Image 1 (spheres, helix red, strand yellow):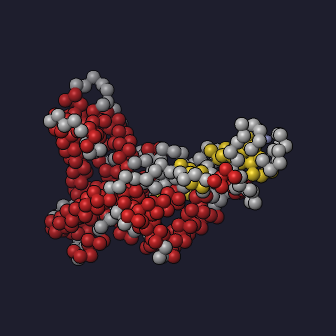
Image 2: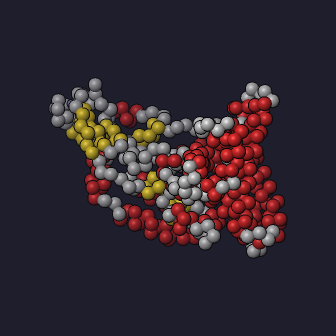
Image 3: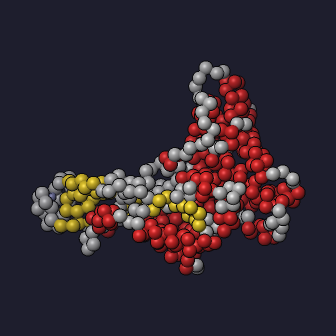
Length: 412
Ligand SMILES: [Zn+2]
């Protein structure tokens, strides 16, 4: 059987067929070469990679996509080049999908397509999955009275090994269902609810640490409430209870499934004790999210953010921003965020760079970001460069089957 050769590099070394031998696929750490006419097959090992994982927020993508600001357009171009050079991977997340849904109908799909192209199809695990991994790891440590300090593993947020070589084609996992109206309504309502709290928060005398604790407790409380709602709807005989349940109600459900000799009511008590423990408070997503809202309270106490009209605009993306930072920061080498998130994440009270080793960039320190990209470009190892030349040989012909193309296969 002939191979689907992507780049023809010459005559077949086996059957001698002219102009029929070339690159077929790149996968893991191997470049495979084959022939359009015979079964000849070569596997060429590729050097190991050490890609940087970078999160580009919606603000970055929106500006690069609109093309109005040169700085974003140029940076996006450089990141795509670094991704193709196998030095960077900029996975997209379900938050990019949701935030793109908030755009006008005609722009939603093109924007998301643009984001996915920069990502070369790499995607972060769904945020609930990341939280679940973290909470279960903390719960297991709690069960054996292990360390309360939390260690993260990259596989929890990136199912696919980012240090594999990217193939010529990637499969688009498909577009989202239309959730525009629901997401828009939820976003508007939650921001109004938040702004309503500002006066109260500004007048409270609690400390930052107390506010963090209170945010952690309300996070635990919300898991419990969602679970109680779920149990109630099951008990009322609602046949759709399972399908309409909020995903967060499943967190407790999943913690109850730990099989041991404890009867169910005691297992529930054990979960409640876990929620009150440092094990839960140190879960990175819980901790970072709680710290961000505690910092907001702190800044309100200090008299910041007094302009109500400005606030509506300033905080319109806050919930999405806190969600992606608290979920994915521990797994990233760098994040590009807006100025407000940069200020908060680098505030000494939170200091994500120190805590999680993530570099943070925004317009505020754009020159540092450009230097970071310069350094990555300069760091390219010669053996990787050589391999790239083998993978995309200059002047190689692409055969007919590729030019026909297919709607779901994206050429990179
Ligand atoms: Zn051949």
